[in-house]
Amino acid sequence: MDELTLRKAIELAVVTEQLGVEYYTRMERKFSDDSQLKEIFGRLVKDEKSHEAQFKKILEKTEEDDKLQAQYEKYQFLRATAISTHLRKEDFTEKAEKIDSAADALGHALAFEKSTLQYYQAMKDILGESSQLQEIIDAEKQHVVALFKVIISDAKFQGTGYKW
Image: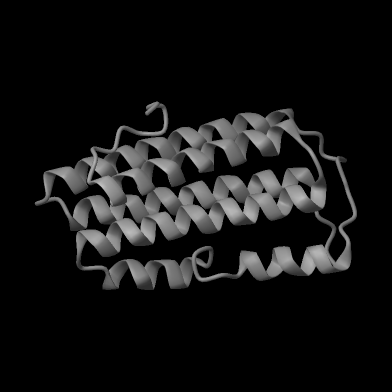
């Protein structure tokens, strides 16, 4: 079993945000003729870049030797979550190419954010309480809530800083 560390968890968070930037940039281009969708995905690109920068700062403050041994069952759950279709770049890119409607694009974005959140919460379950990891989880929760609000109410996406 590979040793899981808080540092490795945060490094994965950075990569995940980069995947989000890639996906949301594709969707922004794909739906460039729909001003509302273009704006939503453009805002998500900015938010993901902001999260990436935030997580890189957290990474700089995280000790290299912060190691915790995971229980086998918890570690296996984390691995299963990591290879879900929403976190594998190949599947992620393939699905992005097949999206042809606003509902699909927003639904896929919500599924990605929920999968990412589930992964980070599984990390927290294994690694225990961590202010750094909680910061990442809180950022992902904001995207889930904001996207859900847009989907169910057709509201304008305001970004993760918007309080409603």
